[in-house]
Image (cartoon, rainbow over all chains, first blue to last red; front, side, top):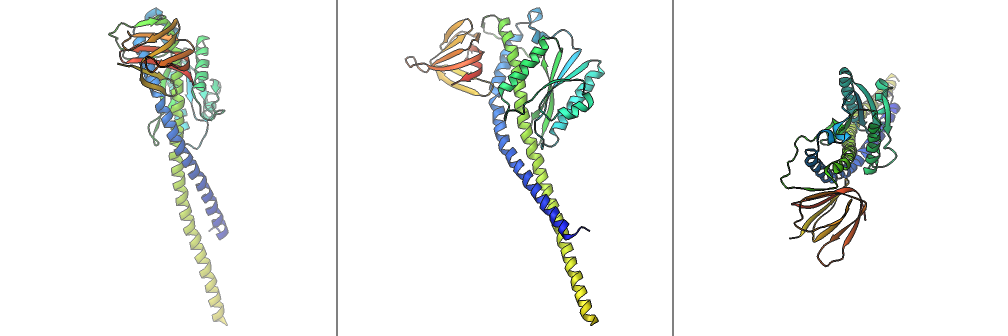
Length: 289
Length: 85
């Protein structure tokens, strides 16, 4: 049985933990709203770009297709681009992402392909390093800016495309969390490079004039498309991080509340027990006289 | 019938409005788009998009960097990576 003083100390420490988790929860809730609206604002651009890509990719195919669309002709060397968060306190979000990345890596290795990692964000580094220390070839630090924007996405995408041009890998997969709701964020694996051909090519009935030519436009378009994909992943990560953080901190606050209640009951019981013992001692002493 | 003009960046939908004419800095020369323009697609160079709200109004100038313009039956859409001002 812990002493009264110990109990009091523990109650106080749990109370201050609760204060921290509650504050973090409220911050996350406020940030979540902003992250969600940012993700929504990015949608028109992405959908337009995809629509234009779909109408163009159908026209330019075969040997005329640029390398970013056609690929290197091999799929031996794979690059896994894992987008993790920079900060913790967001429940199982990062460990789920790492799990998905490792599953994909094992799947590719089982097919006899080589893998490499490119890590965005701080939190995935340590757990992936434990298993794949040699395969981590690069990364991008997004923790230097408050909210990663299009400039960061551009920098990441440009570095990846430069690596692709140098022939460092054949296929790049993008692994990032998709924001479903504050309760659910799903790790998603998407092929980033070569750009997957749109499933349905829109047959344009109108004759469209292209300036300069279709191939030139497509060549300009593909890097933009890759950048938009990375940007989308960053936005999803932001929303997921805040959502997961909010849920995790809500749970933590509730647990702390329960713990405080339990400890308070225990504290009161031992206080009463101490008083009763004292009374018995006094009464027994008085009777003995 | 006015021309429906949309200017979109990765971060947000900057403009979505009905205007008289838009002059776009295409990579092979500037071109003006009026209502009923034939379907057309062009990359754009860094420069100014001029938006004429009505036939006689002074143009509103928007600086854009990197992107392309698409004209279809619904109107003109300019996708730009960066927009200033």
